[in-house]
Length: 348
Image (cartoon, rainbow, N blue to C red; front, side, top):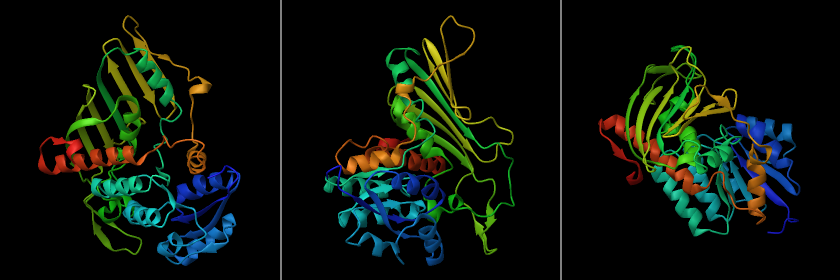
């Protein structure tokens, strides 16, 4: 597709991230037009259409996907619809940008990847983990240059600072029928780590559901099976050992951070301040590591999607191949926690 050719987009699911990021950033791309939107209700779709000047609303996502005047579909729904909408869109000849988390489970992610491979002329992209975009290239460069030496271990701690809360209402992340095997920010943080050191080979996990019931918006009590705390040990393909913790019940916990421990040095990333620091053998204190401007990527998801449609660049963040890898990890964690046994991630 020529860079001068207009790209016409339909939105399926206009949640918070879609309204705050995707729609404004897509509208900012030259020659890009958002022509229709479908949301959970006609009323909410009309509100989004009015707010952003979108000319048409659709009653059902199938109507939107099958529209002849749509070139690309942006999926901003909860995970339960990511796979069916993606499959239908690719079958209808539309490019796809789907919100993270990629799918409900690895089987759905694999179906999505297979469909994209059957349609190599269509762009298929998952909205990437945003937490480390600013530092990814710097970390990759430091690792390649041997800053840490041989990687021995890594730690990811992404814990919410709040205490256990029995009174907060049911969220879609609590509902397995809507979220599948996804737990808290697990898949998103694992995706970020994969950019630096590659994927996990095996996992051993323990999870806990601390709040076992929550009321939905209508007051109905729902039983919760999605964990609100997870501890994971992983054998990484690169040979290092990984330890991951994700929790919504760790009162006063510090903000999310990642540690990379090597034979010659250590790197630490404080996600709250977006500060990268490190120290090498012989040093006694950490020092901040500046992020060169030319290596700081930042958020450019919508630009990358449109550029890929026009043949200007290839999708890097995030491919369906990488999306499948983090869904395999996500499901392996749940399987390990349920069985009490180590699980081979690549066999899930």
